[in-house]
Every structure is written in structure tokens, then in C-alpha cells.
Amino acid sequence: MRKISLIGGGQAGLLLGFALLDKGYAVTLYTDRSPEQVLNSRIPSTAFLFNSSLQFERELGLNFWEDVVPYGEGMHVDFRGPDGRIGLTVQGRLGELKGQALDQRTKFSRWMREFSQRGGKLVIQSVSVTDLERIAAESDLTMVAAGKGPINAFFERDEVRSAHSTPPRHLAALLLTGPQLMGDRPWARVPFRPLRFNFVAGVGEFFSLPFYTHTRGECRSFLFEAIPGGPMDRFQAARDGHELLEIARSVVADFAPDDLHHLEGAELTDEDAWLKGSFLPTVRKPVGRLPGGGLVMAIGDTAVLNDPIAGQGANNAVRMVRYLAERIQAQGQQPFDADWMQDVFETFWNASAVFTTGFTNALLLPPGEPVMEVLGAASVHPPVADAFMRGFDNPANYFPWITDVALARAFVAERTVRDAA
Image (cartoon, rainbow, N blue to C red):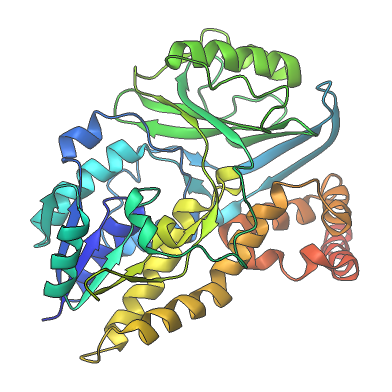
């Protein structure tokens, strides 16, 4: 039985731990917080999983909340000017690719307990360099899924694949409940429970998603992405979630005033249901070499960290975990050496992560001509809108048309013919 060690108790680390336990490996997972500490902490994100990601969790028997978490059934997007006026609206259904957003405090604390019950070894400790040297020496394979932690310094930034030198957005998020936010159709203009997006030219973006948390049950998440130094960049001085909520009201009033009534009577689901900050999206080289000569491999956000604008962080982690589990099993008793680590990452990058990163980075910029060609058609042809929204489940579906006007027109033509029929 080969011994695998995982550093990090988030989406990538925990999910890979379960996948490997399922295949018969001896798995030890190191994380710096207990299940109780995770459950009672500040929200780490507002991650939304699309159907293919949810399906992998179902296959591993980890979908404990399937029947209580509300589904996001489609997307309603308004593209606005800086004065708040709507210039273009696109609304599409996700169909069978609909997804769910579950509080990661709820999820990971339960998964940590489940991991031990299934035979995994859970170690609660901060991992130092000395610890990591020891762990790598005792393990057949050690993988680091430490998100944004300092241990990532062992993995060199890939300058070619990392498009950003500074954080592209300043972020703020809240979990809210209120009389204007609940129900199957909280937005009168949307005939389904939506992922509600606003893109404000030159200002930033804000999103509202159906959500579930252990503290209040069904609620909605709000994520604000402010262009640094711009008129939406107001959140960073907030001292708590209540101040953050008041700033959120002012932002919605200024840039989407028709949506402001949804925040009437809204309140935080709990005192820790908020976050603010920024980070630098980074792609790292997968092989980390420790001072003593040991090797460790980057996975999840340690390997590919994207801005949350496209909602791909946790979904990218799931895709990577599915692929990693297959490659680890296929390696049999052969060594997990640097060449193997590099090949696994390169293959996954070329098949999947390059598209996820490319799509995410595209959303951080004003839409180019191919995207505008598709969005314009999507605003009047539901099949085009549905196809565009369903691409979020697998961003490879946006390529190559996202960079080629002729291919974008072909993408539209195929679906408008269906619409006319």
C-alpha cells in the first residue's frame, strides 16, 4: 500500500484524499485547523460547483447536502455603464448542468470527520519546512494544496502562464438572508432561480448566487469585485460584516439601482459570514524541491490560482483531482519522481487548466469582438444564451471561438438556426 501525504484541507486536498482512499491508498492529510475551528471560522469563499464537479462528489459519496442546497438554475447577466444603465442583458439556463453553492465551513468540517471515519489519517498541525521534509521522506508522494499559504514559496511562479503582476480586483463577499432574496424566483425579470451577475464597465463586477450555510440554511451569497482604485473600491476599510453590508448597499445603489430593493431587510447569516481582501492570480510550476532534496507537488490553488470572477476555483480543483487520482493509480509501483509530476501537470494544463485560466482572464478584461458577437446574439436567441452559460461547467467549450470572430459567428449561426427551427 503506497503512502500519500496531502498538505491542505480544502477542496483539492480533501477531495483527493477521499478519491485515493477509495482506491486503497494509505492517505494522511495535514491541515492547520480542526473541524470545529473550520465550522466556526470566517467564510473562506463563496464557491459554486457546476454539475460535473457535483457528480464527482456524488461518486465518492460526499454529497451530504444534495437535498437541502438550492440549485442555481441559470444565469442572468446585465452589462452596465458606470452610470448603472443596462446596455445589454443575457439570460440563459444551465439545464442539466445546474449547480450548487455550499458554505465551505459546513462542507469541509463534515468532510474532515468523514475522512477519519473512512480510514484516512487526519493530522491537525501547521506544517513547517522541517515537518515537510520529514513528511516527504516518509511518503511515496507528497502533494501541497495549501491555497494561498506561505508554503507555496517552494513552487516557482510560471511567468509565461501567469498573466497578472498585481491583484486585478479587490474582493468583498457576504452571505445574506432577507425577505427580498429568498424563494425560487427572487428576481421578477428571471423565470428561474438565478446566478445574478452585473458587469459594470470600468468599475468592476458583483454577483449574487443561491447558497446554503449551516447557520441559517438557504440564503444568497454576494461577491463584489472592484477594480483597484475605482469607484467601487470601497470595501477594504470595513471593520466587520455589518459595515461591509452597508457599503454593499451603497455600491448597488450607485451601479445597479434597480436591484437595490433586494437588500431591503437583508442581514448577515452570521457574524463570520463575510470576507474582504485581494490576491494575485498565479500559475506555479508543479515540482517543489525542498532544502534537503525531497520533492513535493503543487495541486489545486497552489498550482493554479485564478480570480473568482468566473467561479472556477473549486471546479478547477475537482477536475484536477479526478485526473490526479487516475494518474496516481496508473503509476502503479513506479516512482512519483519530478518527471512524473511535471508530465501530470502539463497534460492537465493542456487539456483543461489552460482554458479555465484563459476564460477567467478574459472576463477580467473588456469583452473582445468574438465575445461581443456571441453576447449580442445571446441577448435575443435563448439557445445561444443557454450554450454560453453552460460553458461555465467546462471552459474548454469557449475555445477556440472566444478568440476568433469567424468561429464565434459560426457558433452563433449553428444555434440561431436551431432557434429559428
